[in-house]
Length: 107
Image (cartoon, rainbow, N blue to C red; front, side, top):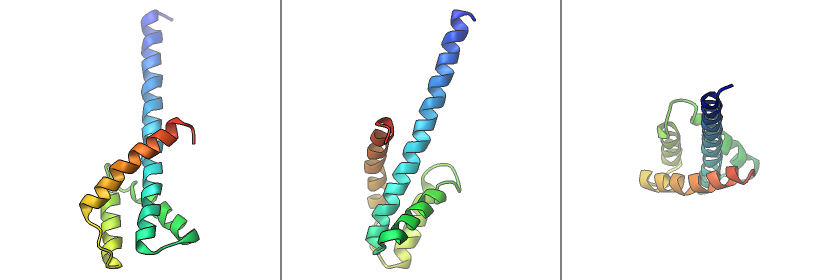
């Protein structure tokens, strides 16, 4: 195998690893976000864990964070919990950093 092919293969592996870590971090962020939202909604215990899984699953509806944001906004509105879109987006930004660090640490 030529040196160029080895480098190309290395870049492809690095890209695949980066994408996998990004996916895992986003899923972890959504789980943490779901637990945060569950607390705001007054959901505890196993129900909170189940709700967090629903938030993770909501992210598979479309690309981007819009599907998760819509789910949380609808759930907050249904329970008359006053949480703004900006507050949710801020929490998403905060939690993606936490989730990425956890994924890199192998947690």
